[in-house]
Length: 85
Image (cartoon, rainbow, N blue to C red):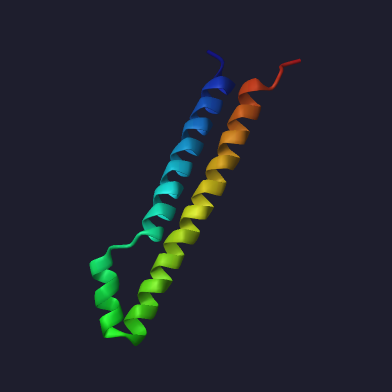
């Protein structure tokens, strides 16, 4: 197997892994633990803000992971199927 094909497959696998991790982070940020949410709301103020902020950071990190995963998958496909002259 050609070295470029091995590199392309590794890039594809890395892209799929990044996308999977990003999707999990976005889903986790959508449905947080209700016990923690209720406790933070009961404390009010700063803790409630910190909880929202951490959920927002998780969501943004997930979106970045999905985006990078798609870029890696596209790059891997381009390398894999690029015709040699």
